[in-house]
Image (cartoon, rainbow, N blue to C red; front, side):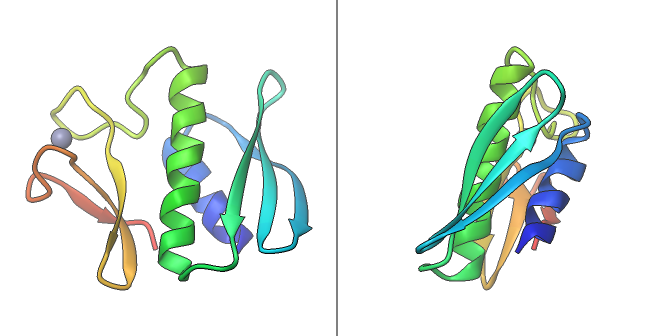
Length: 108
Ligand SMILES: [Zn+2]
């Protein structure tokens, strides 16, 4: 499961890492960040994996955008907004929120 958090952090490319992992009933609590920032995100164990990963990616992204003063993370190529994590089929993709045909890349 943690590899998915690591993959999201790598895609954001802001130097954040997994700092603490606390398994709990129904979810895994993961603290991410760097020396300056610590934020908690959740990986749900009670929903399909794709849903859990998309929700986690969205939480990580929200924290990252807030920590970086509204920067588009990850940036949609050629657009001003960030890509959105979306469940597509049985996987998860980073897609352009305005036009999925403009950009879509595999997350899971
Ligand atoms: Zn876009």
